[in-house]
Length: 298
Length: 104
Image (cartoon, rainbow over all chains, first blue to last red; front, side, top):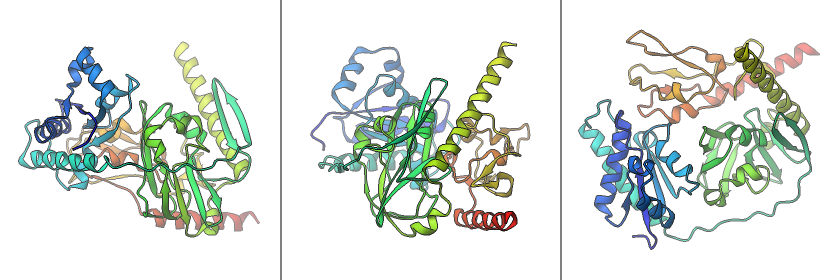
């Protein structure tokens, strides 16, 4: 097993089978690996001191039953980093086992929890290996910028192409980096967790190649191009805030060997086109918010 | 996101949004009405109803962001299906070239 301390916190949502599966995954995990500390989310929420200490000295595994992400929120509001995240609906699809609708788990539901726990322990063993982080040399970027209300948005002046899903490609020869725009990171607010694609994966234009989560929402990176993933920015797993701080630079998501860039480009915008597109979108949203506010005040 | 959205006026890649058939379809055989997708989607694509067989429907299909599939991530019973992305991309290209032809 791993040479560092681990703890596990399930959402334990008792009003949904998904929550009960999450709780069962945590219980099955500590049954197999008693060294992993179990954190009760309810007690943690009550301010249990012992847990706060464990959380600070261990790597944290979070098990969420649904998109509400209660376990994730408990960790994020303490400004702690999530080491590994298990999301039950995703696992249910992966293992083709149904969670069931009832609050008393079916045999299939229990089987799902056991399977997830076994895989979780295996993946924790694997992640014990040193992860190599690839650093990319990022040149200085010149930006167009605009401030609307209290928000500041930037778009590079050249060298990038964009799709209407607010993701970018920065082509360099037959390779290209992809990532999300300032608009997308702003609408997510503080990004806490990133799911990167797998190296070697073949992708088509507009495929979903990764996702990122903030306390507010989950968003996807929709690839502007087709090709093969040749490297990923592992640093984002440790420092997801780079997506907020430097979305066009250190916050790059993945590197792609481009399959058909000339054709893909037909459906992409250049820098100034995207800047106009983004401005329009922001202005529309801002006007709408103002209207809502004034209606509320009337 | 998605605030102030008026599907009649919206375009996606310069094509009127209403010409692009991209939205989720609910498989009622699989859906267990957990409503996770509705809770998650910020664009009001879904709506709850009083019909016991269809407690959830796709009410505003054109509010759905073309190529977005995040709600399907929340769906444990795998009841949400989206159109073939390749076909939609092809259609968008076709509509764009037709529009270009018209404007010349």
